[in-house]
Length: 202
Image: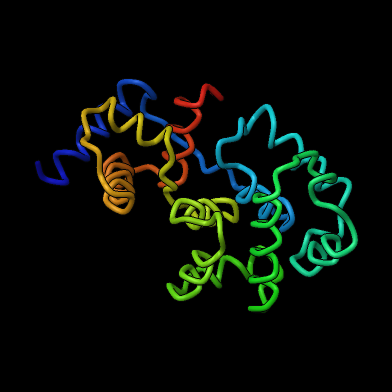
């Protein structure tokens, strides 16, 4: 089956279940500590009930972590597991490693990261961090307003419900991007609408 016909299946499923939109991009965070913790802690986590409230609290309790350097300073002085109330050694280690990588590359603000992600080599560098896969790289882009499609279990399930066969990550991402173009919607907005529908956050 051709990509356009598979994309049409997604389009039809979106229109049937989610209507005609518009689907707005959520915008993400401007606090870099929240960006890094979001992408590090969100796998296999109930986002709305567990993670989002802790990210909001982190912004209040660590206002100086709005920049990567500020967040790095906090990490050197305090225990992130305690600050996030999230005792998961690997996720804490991922947050530390992303922070160190960004700081080493001169990335300090949301705008810095937005520009830095333009380069394929930089996205590849993020992939070298343990716990960071292709979905995480696309997801961190969404958290800083780049409007990308980050394929997770919810987007895979939605596509399967639409009759789309199991595809590799990059293929399914391209299919969602094509569907967004056919619908005239923002890619990140469509992704978020599908995620909210399947996760029960809507």
